[in-house]
Length: 232
Image (tube, rainbow, N blue to C red; front, top):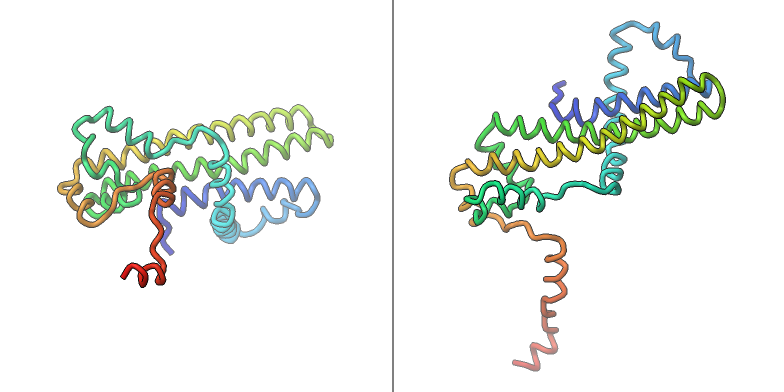
């Protein structure tokens, strides 16, 4: 089995945090005894943790996407395009600057294999940090609940604050990596030969959602068959 950079960063790493959080909650509630599990053979334990982390990362992926969508401050592709055009005036009128980001990343994969790995790494790290924010926030809430329920309150409160700070930093850092991901894609596409003509010949520029809605409203309705018969 071969795991790529997306599998490890975007799924396995956040899944390990969900696994640790679930083990903590299950242990506190008395559902699972962690001690006997840790005495299992090393190969079985490592394999179980790896597979469980990967599966949990896949299943919980939508939670990170929802949190990223709800929280403010997410950089948009249009904002990065405007910044790139401001920094590189020669690219302002080029077709690739208006193309969809997924299409541009596919062009990078075709023309520059090494650069595509760097672009993929930035995207995978962004997803890893973003998806880690949810279990960190959940751990902060769980530690706060443990402090209220009793026990070592100083440790629980300190851990809760640390987890909350880590979750906030994860969201903020994921915003930075998202911007770098977009910018690296545009910077690489700037040097791809004939990319503008290829986009003009084979693809339509990306149309903002607001313009798509406006064009649908402004589009005239097709005449009905009876209208066409009357006109003819």
